[in-house]
Amino acid sequence: MNKLTPFIVGIFAMLFSCFSLAGDTLNAANTSWILTSTALVLLMTIPGLSLFYGGLVRVKNVLSVLMQCFAITCVISILWLVIGYSLAFSEGTWFVGGLTNIFMTNIGEETLAGDIPESVFAMFQLTFAIITPALIVGGFAERMRFSSMLLFSALWSLAVYAPVTHWVWGGGWLAEMGLMDFAGGTVVHVNAGVAALVAALVMGSRKGFPATPMPPHNMTMAITGAGMLWVGWFGFNAGSALAANGDAGMAMLVTHISAAAGALTWMFCEWNRFGKPSALGAVTGMVAGLGTITPASGFVGPIGGLVIGIAAGIVCFNLTVYLKNKLHIDDSLDVFPVHGVGGALGTILAGVFGATTISYFSGQGLSLESIGSQVQVQVIGVLAIAVYCGVLTFVLLKLVDIVLGLRVSDDEETEGLDINQHNERGYDL
Image 1 (tube, rainbow, N blue to C red):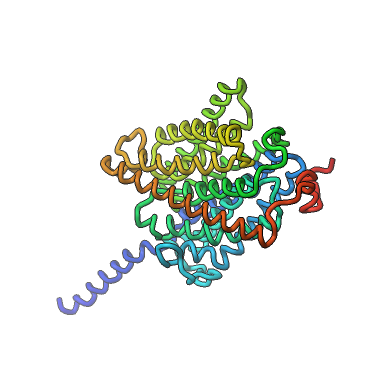
Image 2: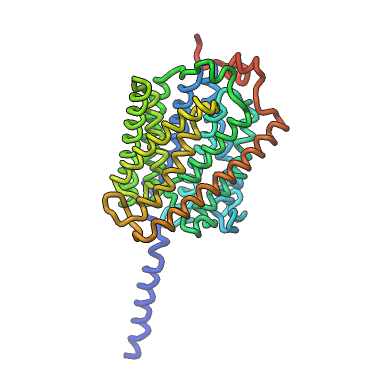
């Protein structure tokens, strides 16, 4: 028996080693899904958001918007490599990550984040870092200098996006509080919406607003881009499960339901108020439904997705009309009422529907008694990010204005940014 003891102990040690390393083993199915999701989220910015925003501006500015989205993709990608990823996801303080992953020096082919390659995780998160400042473009479209846009986007991504990402997803103080934000209601949508509102207020309205109508120049282009956003959003929300599992499947289902409900609700609100439904209203409602379900997509069930989509259509529609027609704030492409308000609404409702045991609403379900405390955490998260983003965005815009000047001249705005910023036209007419 004594002779067999070392052999038996060795066998058990090998088995224990195998089980203990199971969590550190690459999962091919999960990796494949996140690779796919990464491509889908990048599709949202180029070409989805580019075409959507490009179709919504006037013909003399279409190329400038396409160029802004494209250039932001390039600039943020390099910054993410150099320091952005490290600030967001490296171990650091309650406020921001450390510098251990500058230039992604610790990421190799064998490095894992959970059970997927860390390179895939870093690239997936990069696509979120790209689309967030690209969304802000809608707040100052048709009037900001290209050079100023580049500098502002770069500074904002490091000073605002990276720390907030660390707060929520990188182990920062909101993560420790238990904030529920599955795919970016606060990190992406509240952040971008508040920044767009501040930019619109700091820069002032476009010439002629609100007296002069400024309709979209190409709704065909805008609807094409909106369709790409809808499809790409499956990677945005379902990919945030970081696994090919039931959470991803439910996130995809509720995302689709909310988008459809948001589009129909906005359409009927518009139909009731103005007498006719518009294609612009339908696609804007779709985006509102998508943005609002984003933070809750991993926590609610199908009926929760339906209710959130309907709420998004009603609330975001009325806020959009109020800001433009009553307050005369020229958030050119409605970033704040759609993304900012939608993201905040969805984050708060995640604490309601995601924290209930009622099967009609919940996907995962926390205890019924936790609703009040969870909603409190959600509100704190929304307010903290809105205030931080608003203050820092204001400071950065003023800094850029001092260095480069934010706005093109009146004559340049009249001529259009395509010609005076890029010496090109969107169309050869």
